[in-house]
Length: 616
Image (cartoon, rainbow, N blue to C red; front, side, top):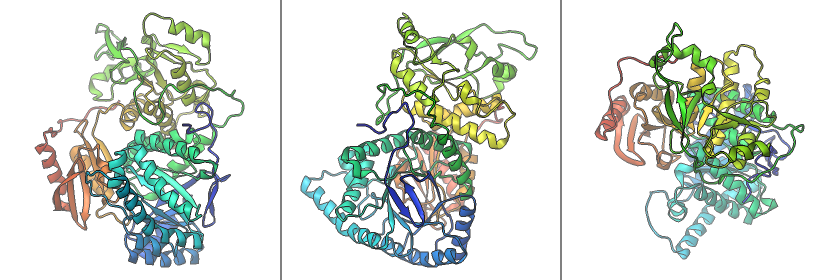
């Protein structure tokens, strides 16, 4: 199956255009930027104001939750208020669980988003075997519930997003396909076939997950299946990493998922989901799209090669373990004296993916490495005997492959190729036994930013470039060490390196959080609650905690989380272990302490250290 025309040469996937109000998605339109308001949908004035605020910062499509028929009915007042104030941004109704709410919303909005996992389908995590007859019966029941909405949308020229969430697959899908990207894709296609039978084609697909590896695989598989089904299945795609969280970690995770797919030419509209005020999402989304616009370079020669990895299923590239000279605590003191013997560190094989720094950065922090906590450099580039190569140079590649012992190999800085394509080509031509060192930028790419001192706004671009160019190969299973070249400040460079490894799920060194963005369904203040939980738990290395304002995206989104903190009712919280609720209706004021107690009960609590590490 093919998910893009050439994974080594950027070309945006051709799609049909779907109109959402006055905005076109897909076709020859630019990649559209979306977001979602966070207030109660019944608060008409706040909904209007937040929508206008989003439109003013460049949001092109705004989504509003509609959990009940009453909320859906109030969309009429919100839309009329917006149009009366001269705001023509298209409005999307976000629907979960209630087909009646979808029917009402479709009377007032430009687009309806439905989730196949919880639209007229059961989701109780019940294990059962479905006979073919029972499975067909369930599909017929869904057809009966879904057909009226399709008919209404077709009549009113309202678009529809069939948006699958990894965490909310139905029991029927879970039992047939498992909690997998394939299950996500097939869940959406079931609903699309019903729509197509009714000659309705104003469809957009999405395959969201909080885990970038799963999200990337699901979107690739979706596009591959659409390609197989035929040229008239060329529907646009909406990209997003759900429950990405907040701050730098969320921006990195979003760049890994969204940026990787955009680099493959997949994606016609995007939403960066942050547990922050919604207008903060738009600059990140705009920057991601701007970076992709730079990838289309007709000057570059067309290259092609067979991929060395399965694009639909993660597996780390199998390499041999090698020994490399390691950074040693106390090796160089502030006066420059070398006080420690050289030591070796493993790279490749089953070793951790290592963090490499250039000598110039190492020299700036060498005197305080013992105080840098988990953000230490591990290998100095100039000491690691790294072999640099142009992956198109077959003679140089053959020479490396003929070596008796495995070597640490990277792409030369002067190679005129997009970074992701360069490392994919290297992995395809290099014998698997040789470990690969990933870089975020090559010299000609760094020149685009220039040698000026980077301001805060420039760091966002640096962060997104690094997360995309290193995170994408990591999610493909490529990479045994990483080197961030685009950030000169050693502390920021090291923090960025480790945070990329964490966000890609490649190396967990701190507490991991899955936190949803707020919306009108949210049952507590997500930003302040997330801050409280982080303050209490951020020292728990390797523990994964899900913080969800409600449960519409499903406990399955917390499947790989150790613990969950979920809004159950206004002012009340349910606590989960994995995807099983174990404590119910806890008063919000007590919930963080009870979460700590739950972590203790399961043997994963440690007391925080007295002092925090220095981050360089």
